[in-house]
Length: 279
Image 1 (tube, rainbow, N blue to C red):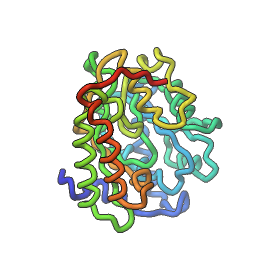
Image 2 (cartoon, rainbow, N blue to C red):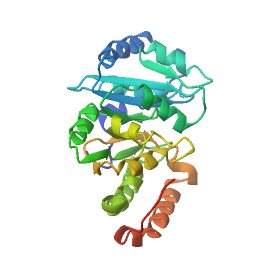
Image 3 (tube, rainbow, N blue to C red):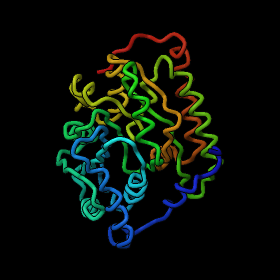
């Protein structure tokens, strides 16, 4: 993949729609039919996606997930975290498996997904990301190695507004260079909830997610799972995600400066890591 272009399967999902009523019956019928393979009664793999008020965005995620091809029995579960829009109606019309969590918060929502999942392997996804057809099998192949407790993959940003893909590619190259520096000693910092996986049994042994955390619940989980094995980078599990979290600085170059400044302060720890305890 060129770092400065957008794959065709991603371009197919770069359209806007006006919620539930903005999608035609052909869309609903197609994804419902394809999702039948993800209602397996005895799954080996569970994919869990937390959802909150994503009526006008989640159809893209659902579409790409429906196109995943896998050699393993799998289930996909959407956890509706008390959405107040028509997200639940959209999920129902797409024929996906969903459960409702009335307690607000990402950690509570991920925990509910963990407790309801049945698979040996638990893959964590998000409702604003797009997933390639090989995504599930790439993670299963990595987690079959018993020495690996956590796996995570790379990601690319969908350019927002007038931002060019070239600009986003430069940001990703800078970020991934810094991530590579900390991969060996502080790899848990690289683990993101929209593109990671582990064995469900290991997560349950440590009690699941830290319900006191309102952010970084995925990195915390990865840090705890290091007790059971190493963290592995799965390079062919690249997903595409919205850049809305990235643009809190108002521009891509503001994000670049923030990232570089932050990682420079950590550079000594990449080489000589200090012992850490994360509560």
